[in-house]
Image 1 (cartoon, rainbow, N blue to C red):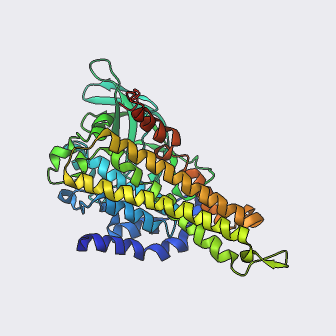
Image 2 (tube, rainbow, N blue to C red):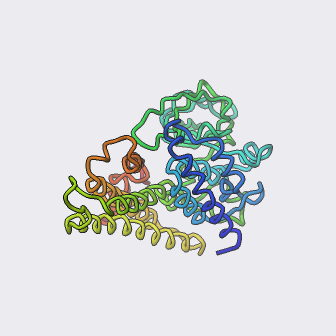
Image 3 (spheres, one colour):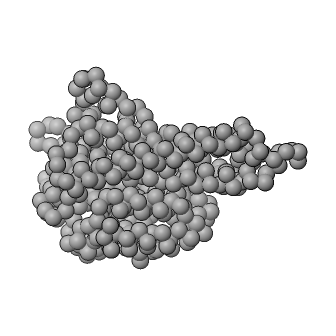
Length: 389
């Protein structure tokens, strides 16, 4: 571990008390406070994966992933927004050189939110495309100068391959529709685009991101990240919040059971049934984290080696992280059952952790269907489906 890496992780750890102190307000106000974003900038952690050419740290994805886990000890929503904004530095790095200059040339601290599912088709015009539509789930949009939007983009051959396109936030209307079960503090509002022009250079093919053949690989030949397949690494981004949430829930419930008396007659913790349930929850949660970290370490070593990356490695990461997150969720639900009726109160801290956990498990990156089916097909010797090829 380099001195710079240690410094970034230490800086993230130092933010935990401040994030924890703001967590209730973050949830209540349905957005991350500006003070938290300012803390991220001061600590330099938003620039973990930004290229050195633009003043970033050009560090590994592993450092970024560990920072997410650390910040979630203080506030889940704040860690989620950090993960989104910092991960998008990677996507921007994968774009053509002029796109990177557009974003960071005048403001090296600029960050981007996103709405990546391709819900609309961008119409081809001279020099680029025009795009309209409503694009939801844009975590961190209130703090971003740019947005990365997924769209099917017409080409000269009549095809509509999916691209991630860059749009200045000043050309976007942000709609406050974030009334949700969990991760309330992320402020993940919808973006509305009205016939916005997107120059060709402000885009990258999704296929190139997943193949590791992006334009940014030529711009930064000394940086391995733009050549890493997106599907190999993205399971170690947002899901990191879930593993920390589960560990927080375990500590919270274990502490609450100490000295707790049921109906004023017997100590809850003295029950072997309670002890077994707590032991099983801890096994589910801690084993889930072990799976994630083992796969992460293996993956980072593979990327750093420069060796060819097989489709099986990509599919295995997706499979295992989906499995691990759902296992951690089962552990949290077991803890909620142990905690009993008090969990129904909105003021109960376990309820907030449980709601966030349920919400995270709806994200596409931890979908059991999308994680298991491709690997199952591979084991059966069947070709990938159209969406996987």
